[in-house]
Image 1 (cartoon, rainbow, N blue to C red):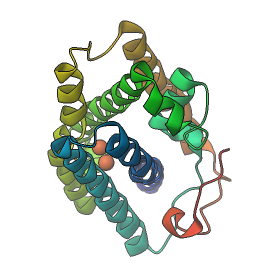
Image 2 (cartoon, rainbow, N blue to C red):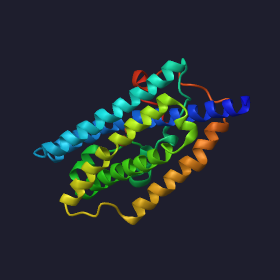
Image 3 (cartoon, helix red, strand yellow):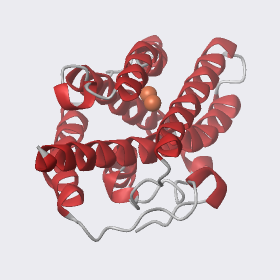
Image 4 (tube, rainbow, N blue to C red):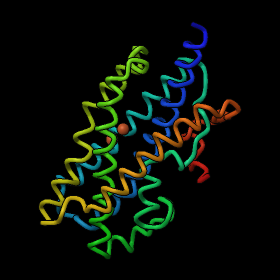
Length: 221
Ligand SMILES: [Fe+2]
Ligand SMILES: [Fe+2]
């Protein structure tokens, strides 16, 4: 019984830490996207408002995970961009980190801007599918607060990919290319089958010393 309790605790700790990182990464990266969209589509107030809402939701999610850890009196496990779906996707497609993304270049290049929209759309669609799986996960659902958090995330998620999908459709562009879908699939497998178990088993893994929103930029590795 003690082993089962320890397993559960560690598993929730790992899942919570990965989510906290990804939510933080989500809302901070969207600041830059919003900036870009304001320049690229100055008259499209609907699209801008949708992205602003997306950003606000990701921030809300981050705060919910932070409170979940705070309530337990501990910090999340120290993780980095290697557990970030969007980090890996940007690296794959643009060959650089989110910080290194050349927003001016992307703005001046219609194809790249559309590619960025597709990366966000696919990342969010993946997020939605993942939450559906989590809502059926008995271990995670056994924590009433986490259960509530994931129900809220699930409800918010369609608003996160639909704006980009609609925008791409309005431009008459394919909403995703086969190689981008393949990249998304591979990244997901790397995270679920590689990073998650590795983190689970890394008993000596340190905890964050500061909350990411207080520490400024996270270390790249
Ligand atoms: Fe989120
Ligand atoms: Fe999201």
